[in-house]
Length: 137
Image 1 (cartoon, one colour):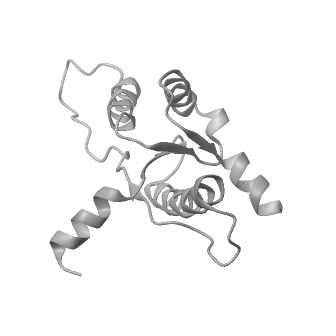
Image 2 (cartoon, one colour; image 1 turned 30 degrees about the horizontal axis):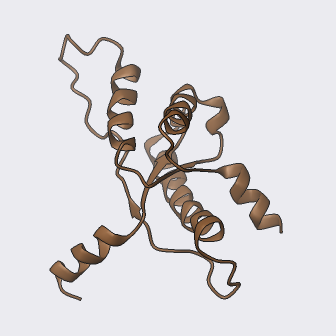
């Protein structure tokens, strides 16, 4: 598939925002949790929104890059870095077709705020708990 076809295909995939607790995690732990959450979001989206076909377990997603990789360190106007990062995440949340809330989201302030935003603005939500419930079926 050529680059243009890949981009065209990517534009029709559901856009997923991953809400992931980050506090007290190393960079490696964040990457591992992020990759796990992407897999879970793909499976959960399939179960909730596509079909119950047992032969297929997931669907391709266009993952919105919501991890903030560069934070200006010398900008005096930032103030509270956590709030600044949350603001950037909410900007990215506006692009989402749905939000997946990863394991531990209920104990993370940022995730809870993202949940409130998604709820208030009618962005479909899939939680880790829904994912686990489906896994146990």
